[in-house]
Image (cartoon, rainbow, N blue to C red; front, side, top):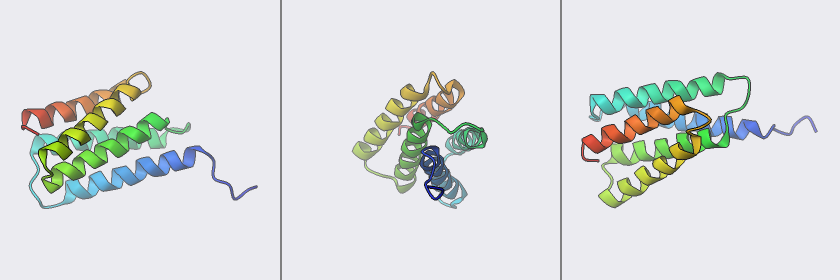
Length: 121
């Protein structure tokens, strides 16, 4: 069955899709704090490094990327506090799941949450 996709490809595609969402938001002219942009850019770079690895990114990395993209969208849209809190909680859960496999990535996600928290988000 040569047309079958290896199981790792959907994970990589999910991470790539999340990266594209974050990159679009970072390029948008709508104001977002420099600190948030900086941490997001670092996080995007680290996620991209996972995609470049010969082994597939673990599903936890894909979940963190998706959760981060959703939080970024919510912040960018100026979503209601309840929506933002839910999105933050999802990133928190995802980063805890990835901590042992990708500590640098988890640290960047933690910095993002801390930066948003310092901004009252």
